[in-house]
Amino acid sequence: MKQRVQEIINQIRPQLQADGGDVELVEVTEDNVVKVRLQGACSGCPMAQMTLKNGIERILKMKIPEIKYVESV
Figure (cartoon, rainbow, N blue to C red):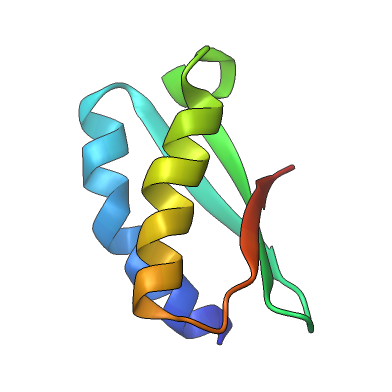
């Protein structure tokens, strides 16, 4: 599961990097919760929660329906 999530994050990453940000996969829990760390411009951005939920989480759940949610750590 973690490898599948990492592959999708690697596909999303260039869009975040284009805006000066980045995302790091921290962990995928046993109950399919994905924990990520937003970096660069994303870490202090007021839109970070929208990026997390409407971007990263939406794409991950679309491609891996077993994912429950994504949270930033």
